[in-house]
Image (cartoon, rainbow, N blue to C red; front, side):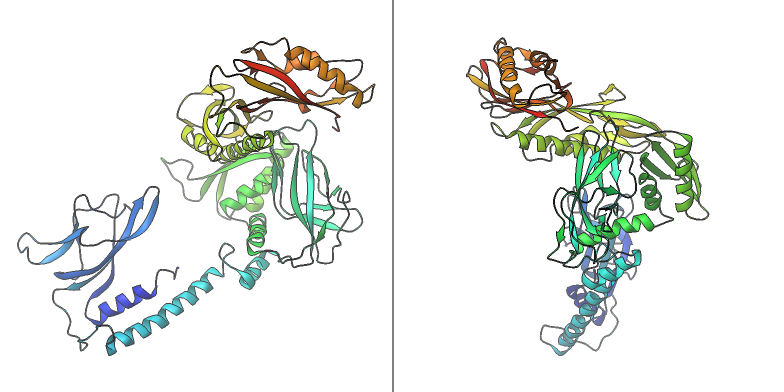
Length: 575
């Protein structure tokens, strides 16, 4: 039920049409194509006063009022003067397939009416407009009542009442809030999902719940999320106090609040409250596809769950759905837990065909062309992180028989305004995918390469230096070390000299790898270089930044270039 379509102009128009003997709101459904003729019920027809439907504009349907430029009234072959049907003109706007037409019109033989004057200002017109205004006001009030029943549209106190159904309450001013940081366990593979309302405490009775869900991507070490005190009386705590993760999460090593929590100065907004409530609904709901999917994906060892109604399109069976579950760790215990979760959430009378889905590991390699002549390294890193997040989210949405479209991958990559162009290669289980559209095999779900879901090659700028122009490439080295036998400060000078000595031997156009640099600065008697945490940055004078990490493709020096060491930072690894 929806009340929003009855606005004041619509009500006035329909009432005036009825008052003068016309027919209102006659509907005709358009099928897969627009028919040649649309016959009206009360024919013959004198004239059409209003014809409205929907037209397609790109991918969207928009409301449209058709005028006499778009259609004409047609009579019968025996008597062309008896107008009985609507015909849309060639090269004019036509209604979109699978939409509805609404028409107001006057039959040829009108019913007698005592009202003869409906001009603006007349008694009849004034009474109709007054009544229409009151009816339109009632429709608006009904719409407000209708929207107040849903989390998506309710506001203020109405939203408070809706979310109370799932035991969620608005955080008032003065409630303790803050951020907590979750860190990945060393060596843990894949993505790690952190559900909303994850409990962390200080071990002294101050308990906080995460206010949002979060996911640690395969190449992400930490993630920071907002948390709030479980109760209004929960006290703020100092930095470093929230270190107790009350329920273990596979892949999470530790949790801590880097900064003190504090008393909020404002009430939680409607948007923030609705976001928390939606997740609470998914967590407590049962008997729906979303409840089953969220319930399964909330298990730490489930990487994806896909639900298909009528799994056999050639022989659809009502009351049957197929659930394909991809496990990060496939063993009997995890399978029993997943089956138990399905039994808890499945609706009565519905048969679930549970299948253990295999996984197709997808990988993306991206070469970028960025706008301008250069960008700070941190901004380039943010651009890469954004691409990784968008592609990772898209891959997670692919279920069995899902389609990966290259155009969609390119569109997601180019969403950042700083990206001018991108060259993307896709692989599935290590094999190159050359097709424009690629379909996942039946019974398999897509996952990302846990080591490197998205790798980046060259990063160029569209206003880079012209050929033949001298290019100065400044090199910054961020080296992490461990197993020290000397102080960290004493290592900077020898590492700088070793790096400068290596770079001085390179000619323009030569390629240099991370392994070459690691070998040049190696000194086993004094330190061990932590390759996975170290990075070398090549800052081209008018060509932007390129980062070189372990296992990255070699960096090729531009023509007419000179390498100069600009900064070397040596730090002891905390891992």
